[in-house]
Image 1 (spheres, helix red, strand yellow):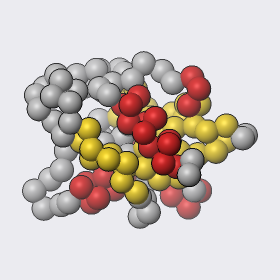
Image 2 (cartoon, rainbow, N blue to C red; image 1 turned 90 degrees about the vertical axis):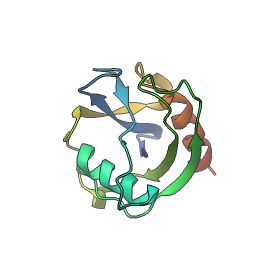
Image 3 (cartoon, one colour; image 1 turned 180 degrees about the vertical axis):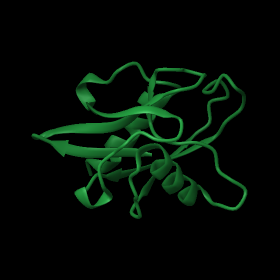
Length: 129
């Protein structure tokens, strides 16, 4: 889930700090694996709520990311989504397997896990339209 906000006329992205390997302590987009009883949209909403406390109903699909080497744990296909932050979603608070949450300017992203930089840039192209 790529959650963007416009803050002081500059775009920012909400990231979580990973508590566990792979990429322990790196920053990442909130997300996780789909459970048996849910579709990709439901999983994205659930993972966002578990890792950041944000409740999001309106999300749009960015696309899929399927490079065989994108996750060192094995073959993982990701369906990425994005939304624009609104105060009614609540304030982000780290939960589940997130050590902390933070907003980062798109122009100064930290070291990111997996291929999340590519996901962020793809999502930002869509939100700018």
